[in-house]
Image (cartoon, helix red, strand yellow):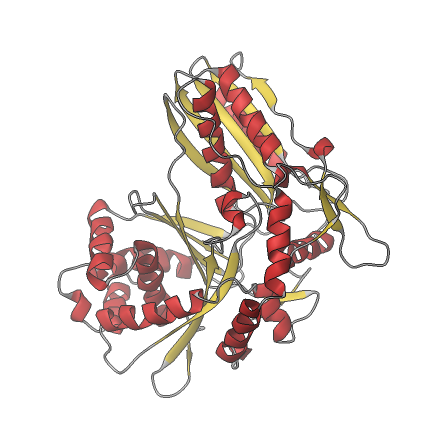
Length: 456
């Protein structure tokens, strides 16, 4: 295996990348899908060693050097890994500023507001900003066409490993695999029997897919500021959710998906009634799509997003029954999670220039805080790219500690009053869901009581 992709090799875009390329062509003057984090570090830091570790990580991560090349009379470009597009770490000394941290944030937000021209500009910027003798920020910016949230975590972990190595405290560790391995695996899957099996599953599963909303690309109003707010999860409720997951036999991320999904099923107006009091609500779930894949070791755009149908069960179904039944259906869906949502759309007649409306969406991000040796380190997500409709984002470490819930909504679809009600009711509902004995209570009644307790 070569350590690097041949810079002369022209590779096709993946389905996911084609979707983002179309988005770019429809919104060429907006920084729509910028992805940006910063890591803030306080402590005894070897600046030269950290500089070296970040630059070496950039050298290894070929996704940061991707360059797109137009193809005459073709709807999409091809891509290569161009060493000339590899980011060179920019060092910024702000120790002389009156308010170094404020200036650092200003510079980062200024950079994020710039449009990345995918036809002519590198996709990534990497800065190391020094705010004080023991205070640093690493700014890591890219574009969703080559990076997802897990990729950002891979970059952070590699920097931490190389920094420790440069200090003489660990081995160098395993470098990233070539970006071409990711492309080759994607091409192999598209011609495999697994692909055919996954296609059959999704064709059958979405035979009634008229429930899934569709957007015309280019019609998204990305310039409007959305509604957002934090929904605090107390330590008591957090422990209750972890205990509930163990009791029911679920992973804690799946517990968060299904518990919050039950709320959406009974509270959002788009949960349709088919017959009697039955309600059905498709929610969108990001799927990491990396287990057993080479891109577990390659920063790349690997994440998928899939529709999952939540539905009411028998009359009076309790919370325990809802969670266990829905968990079985969720596990079944994930067995076919490699199949791209863009392919699902094409299979259902949604052609170029259109896409599914990814709302409501529930995203659980079980990522540890970065561990930079000798420092208190904290990750701050500046931009994950745009979102549709109504979105719930849970964050916690890999053990479910430090849970946080953020809500985002499109003000054209959700009023401020409705949004504020959801913030209050969701918090009350999650507090109630973990109370002893509530597993045997009807799930609909638990939701109703939470909403009654927090009127608009």
